Length: 215
Image (cartoon, rainbow, N blue to C red):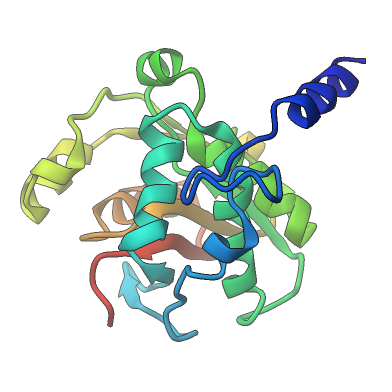
């Protein structure tokens, strides 16, 4: 019943595209704007702690606005489009559904303030596209870290030291696919990989939606 009224309101008050403001398709991201998102070449972007890291696109234009809207401007519906973008890239690497998808966690206080962890939403949508298993309970953030974007690489590593905790009993035994929105220096992936490895979990692949640096 709730969904019925939600759809009815969408029909009465047509959703506008968050990017171009068009209401022709009554969606948060119209097909024209989605098609402007540029993919990076399908290849390993970098190696971190011996694990492959893939980055789907360059952090610019509508992809930048998509991530910022989802992350900072209370636009949870945009998770669908970011997950779609990431899956359309990743399925060119493999279409196997042998992964447990683990999003980068945020500290509970920050999640409460933001009302959601945007990467949890992306992970759920990604698993709907890919038929992989979603696992947000494998890793938690136990340290309220500073925002990373103002820090240099060494400062990021110090900031993230002991920030994550692995609950091994929540591991399903599949290859872990760590997902994040932006991979800049790779410090977040690095700390998560280290913590997983300490707990005997070594089958790990990383996927970021974007990076500021094309490799």
